[in-house]
Picture 1 (cartoon, rainbow over the protein chains, first blue to last red):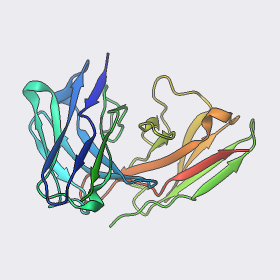
Picture 2: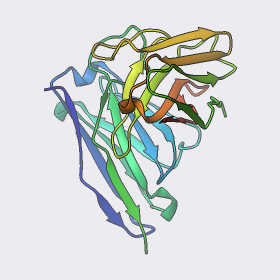
Picture 3: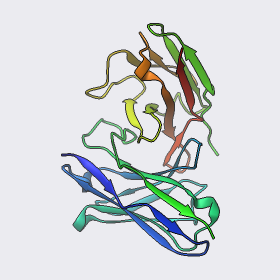
Length: 122
Length: 107
């Protein structure tokens, strides 16, 4: 089965660090970009950045540059999203996404993880 | 930063046609994609490369493009189509940007 499985929900305090994961299976994980998307409570979708697991080429959306780190371990088909110092405003659902076939354009994200809810509260 | 603008809401009766627009200056040069998101679910890809439909997506969903505006059309709307819809394209940092989102209500 083609799927992305994300790590479980997290509850953290401001200033703490965190890394969440996204493991792909059933398709060629290293052949397609993996992206991370934030959705704050009751709000819309926001692209955070993308990584190509084949060579770890990474791009960040301007709003998230310097705020998070995206990485990948191709040997275990897993991508990561990391914070060094969480803020209350990081409270959100985070989705990873990728694609399972070549659509002739790299923006077609047809596989999504189930989401990881991150709550940051003192 | 680059923005894609959508109407906040669209209301439609069952069996009628819903049109959702997405406007952005770079859309004549970059492909658009459309996603559907139902409450507490991950998004689903509906349309890619402006007009193409992935396998498994019903034919009632179609996409079109004209200048700086792309449009998602839902023909013969069904109750199950009530959801939030987002367009997506490429931004200047060579990552992606979502539209502001449109809530479709089936009356």
